[in-house]
Length: 474
Image (cartoon, rainbow, N blue to C red; front, side):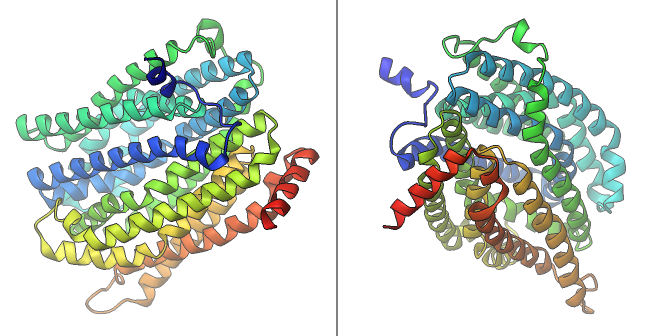
């Protein structure tokens, strides 16, 4: 019993072989992301099978605006995760307690702001994006339900982020599995049973995540041996909210700017018609499986680096970054190969329309070349964030995912115009993604080797990194 309990306890990543600690943390997250993708796929399959391709397009059209309004929360969650890992690594109980408590208070503010903005602007923004008339009302209904219950969604994700910052990725995995399974059951019940349409899909998501948020809260309340959670720690403390925002806002700004860029890309996608939107939704569900190791190892490296910086174990940073990145690349190559082999069967889960499946596979072959690049991007960005430099990944992401991607998407679309494709060929969207990912990987490698994150570290840390690098060379 004690052994099982230890698996679901906070984990100190400043001890033991770096690759083992990273793998122990990343595997539960990888499984969790797999479960999340299974849910996403099932969610889309329920919509596509029971409601049709047009409803699938409506849900996909709602994504960019939803992601844009979640940007503030992304910043809070990122900043809290970094600060939690550093305070936990430093064994700073008071700092850890205040960080977690203030994070929950900030999430309450973010919930109110996000709900109000989402309910007010959903329909006008969808019209601004040229959402096809036949799906705009469905997309608006979907967004209204999601935003009405957004607090449960936000608290579930921030609680899970805190657990990961403490090194407890297994508890976060358990709650994610529960949430996904409950979500799937509610999807089928609300859509197939009650006939609620896309409103049922949104209601299932909010209800499942709200219940999971309560379970995460109970888990955190049980960790009294690690930190305190009470009225005192919930009150804003001098320097704590600003530290969370200072670390998290660059990521939040990145997410916001990225989402704005995606709104422009969504406008381009909408010009290709509802069928292309449906292809894109299907493709992004399959694409999520290839992305799993990237985000899992990126988060693992953020926590690993953060805890070791807090513990002043500077000698472990380079080996952790190198070993974690190699693990991410290896898993990404294997998953991408599997998707190329079985992608057609996966897409067939969402639709019987063979033309959509044929187009989806053609686009997937373009994207496949970039998944390894994304593994490098997420891993090295995670290293920089864990060390406290969230600004450099922000600028890299803004340049590649906003300036480069939007420009190349519209440029390629303009260059490929024809009587058959007056707005350009749909492939332009995916070629722009490949160019973005490849460029981002190269820039992140340069930033890791010579970037700002190194200047934020003490001189003794830099000496330890260089010594470790020399030992690794020979």
